[in-house]
Length: 36
Image (cartoon, rainbow, N blue to C red):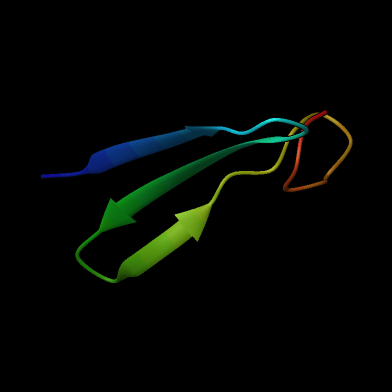
């Protein structure tokens, strides 16, 4: 089973996926981990 975490901060937003192998931060269309 996978879990998804979303962080809506004051300046940036992050999305991460937890799988059996570890946690991966998803990149946006510009290959950046933080989205303003």
